[in-house]
Each structure stands twice: as C-alpha cells, then as structure tokens.
Length: 253
Ligand code: BV8
Ligand code: ZN
View 1: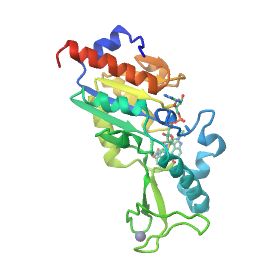
View 2: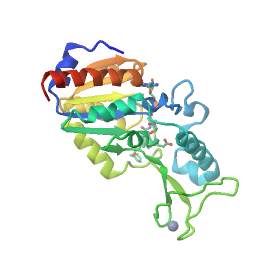
View 3: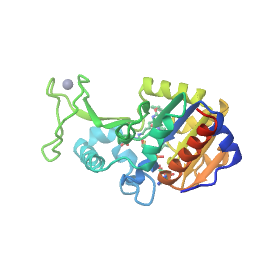
C-alpha cells in the first residue's frame, strides 16, 4: 500500500545511516496484544499501581502472578506482525539500527530484529528475588501459591520493570547512546506517558534527529515531532520500508 511521505522525510531516508525505532504497546496491538491505555487497554480493567509494582507484589503476589500468567498466555499465542517484520527489513538499510522497546512481549526478537534494547524487561524471563537466580521455565500455578526458587526457596518474580523501579542500566544507557546518535528516530505505537522511556524522542530531537511519530492517534509527542504519520504501524512501517528500499536502489546502495 502506498503512503504519501513528505519530501523532508524522503530526504532524510535517502541519506540517514543511523536510526532508532522506539516502540510501545501499539506495535504489538495488531498481533492481538491488548494495549495499556487504549479502549481494550489492560490498565482500563486493572490499575497499574495495583499490579505492576513491588507494593502490589508484596501485598498480593498471587494476584500479580495471575495477571502475568494471563499475559504470558496471550503472548505465547501470538506472532510478530507486519510492523515488527518491517523493522527487521529496515535494519538492513542502515549502518546503525536499534530497536528500543518498552514492550515485554519479545516480539521484536521473535521477528528477527538483532539489536533490541528492552527498557522494561521481558515477560518470558523470571528471577528469584532472594538469590537472583534466573528461573526461565517456572511453572506458575497460582492456585498453589506463587513459585519459589529451587535453589534457595526465595520468591520468584517476572523479570519486568515495575512502576517505581529503575530501568536496567545497560539497556537504558545503550538506548540513550543510540538515541543521541540517531539521524532518524521513529516513535511507534506509544502514548508517551511512561518515563524515563518517554523522554527518548525529545532527547533524539535535541541531538538533531528527525523524529517521526507513527500512531493512529495524536499523543503529547505529536506537536513536537518533525512528522506525524497517522495510522497503524502494520501498514505504515512496510510503506516506509518500500520508500527506503527505492531510495537505496536509486543510490545504488
Ligand atoms: C522510574 C513493564 C526511576 C511492566 C511498564 C512516582 C514514583 C516513582 C516513579 C514515578 C512516579 N510518578 C511517575 C513516575 C515515573 C513512572 C511513570 O512514568 N509513571 C507514569 C504512568 C506517569 N515511571 C516509572 O516508575 C519507571 N521507573 O521512573 O524509575 C524512579 C525510581 C524510583 C522512584 C522515582 C523514580 C518505570 C516505568 C516502567 C513501568 N513498567 N511495563 C508490565 O508491562 O507489566 S510500563 C508499561 O507502559 C509498558 O511497558 C508499556 O509499554 C508502557 C508504556 O505504554 P505504551 O507502550 O505507550 O502503551 P499504551 O497502551 O499507553 O499506548 C499504546 C499506543 O499505541 C497508543 O498511543 C495507541 O494510540 C497506539 N496504537 C494502538 N494501535 C496501534 C497503535 N500504534 C501503532 N499501530 C497500531 N496498530
Ligand atoms: Zn533463589
């Protein structure tokens, strides 16, 4: 499907060598993962502070595990969509290309993206809160209480970043480095309300990147982006890829 891209975006696509794709729950919506704040949003039914926080887990670990088991079940049943696959194609056309994601669904890696920074962790990983042991294949049977560590008996938790928790240093620092080097920065399917992740698009702009927002709805970033492409990522990202590949062919690269 052809999409009209502005001359300024085409000019940047034809010369940029370093790019970042910053993604939120919206890029996984077309795979069937409910977003957080949309009409079918997870948070609408469940409040983040009631579930995605250490307090919630200490207060009611079984409830929190029940929510994560529900989401693990959804995420195990879905596959990457055209938007994820377009980012894998895009990667080949830049000397430096990073996917910086807020998502914990592992869909970028499963699609084949090779440089993925997971700012908020990954639902497929769990670890022991006592000894830190990774417990990847923990069988969470919430009606028999919550899983405990085979090595020390400590409580096991999902390896995700809860509200009030610091982001993993290495992922965050790598994301900031890539953002500051980017010549083009795509902000894809995020409502831009969760910090510090939401500060990346503006950091990119300040560092001189051309910031392109892809979302069916405007967000707080929209007025400050260089370009707002209104629509679903699964349609817009493949169209951008087409243009990119044509630019590269014209330039014989
Ligand atoms: C931190 C993992 C430093 C878990 C998530 C008080 C105390 C402490 C901190 C704070 C505080 N007040 C504020 C903060 C900061 C807080 C924060 O930002 N709160 C917000 C809500 C105000 N941040 C933190 O706590 C962070 N840590 O600050 O540490 C610190 C430490 C101690 C004390 C002080 C400071 C940690 C934040 C990480 C939270 N964990 N996830 C889990 O998933 O279970 S956040 C969660 O929200 C997900 O990661 C999600 O990705 C993220 C952002 O949401 P979006 O991805 O944007 O999803 P959303 O549904 O909102 O939007 C979807 C968009 O897609 C929409 O715009 C929609 O239009 C669009 N869309 C829909 N369909 C499509 C589409 N787009 C394209 N195509 C489509 N087809
Ligand atoms: Zn342990």
